[in-house]
Length: 197
Image (cartoon, rainbow, N blue to C red; front, side, top):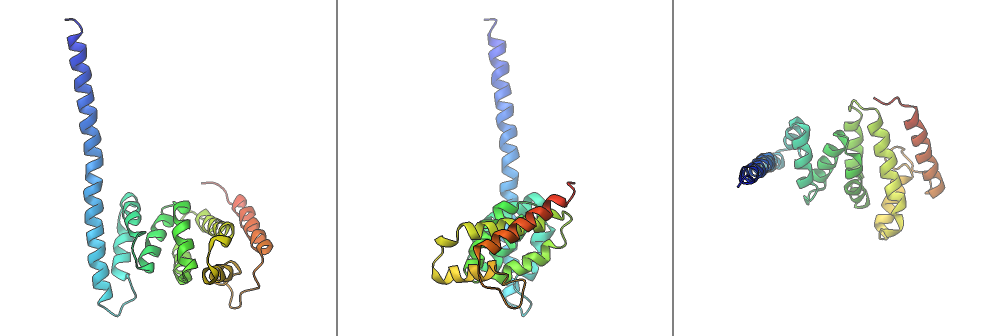
């Protein structure tokens, strides 16, 4: 009989933990759905104007708190519109989740949407953490170089153009794995010189 209070106490503790867990995970799901619906409505409004694509939707995404930006970005990475996927990848990068953004960005570049990457570079230029840009360049170039053989012919040509400086110079140089690796090494050395915050 003396063990009954201890059992009741354990049961109450388990129930409290369960309900705390449920409350903690329910609210963000509601926010995620509301944010996605609001973003989609703004995207439809954007498409009915002559303004640049995603202008209102992009502004909405950028004004959300970081955790909600990241949650919404996860949904948007599956969107069929490349500009929306680029916005999602941008939200990941701006919130310092660079690695998670690399695969979707690589797919955009391989599909011929490298302008999205150029727009992202402009956005990242305003991020407070000066290492984000270098990490983006290092990881994207390394990923594309490592996966170059997995791309089909046309995609591979676009990736090679990008890796040869296609975004950053008016006339891309001839592709060379060694030159790309050397550029990545230079960026890594530059990254080491930046003081950690």
